[in-house]
Length: 123
Image 1 (cartoon, rainbow, N blue to C red):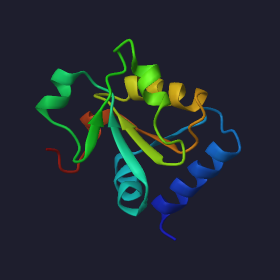
Image 2 (image 1 turned 30 degrees about the horizontal axis):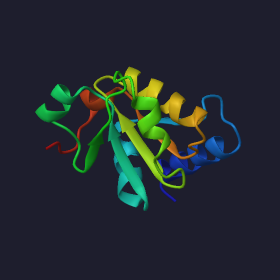
Image 3 (image 1 turned 180 degrees about the vertical axis):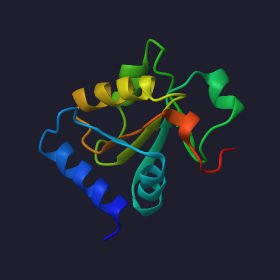
Image 4 (image 1 turned 45 degrees about the horizontal axis):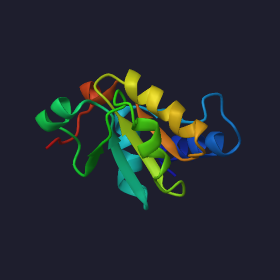
């Protein structure tokens, strides 16, 4: 098992058994590897619409965390899926991950450093 897969599995176990945050922050390479190897996933960009339109990860859905209905919208998503969350620098996405965990989401991953640290392709 590769090191990044081991980290993803460790993060999953932490989430299942109440890790300190309830979600896992992954480095860019770990995040990319997890995206490739995870089925039933959603990529959520929590930046503003303006930021999202400029560039984003492929297949990302935009849910602006600063929008007043963010908590209500996210609460309707399938809690059995795995969520990969990012923003510009990692701060808003960490906040979004905390909200999601508080609503019962168990498989939530935050991109450390946000899209600023992303080395993969954007659209």
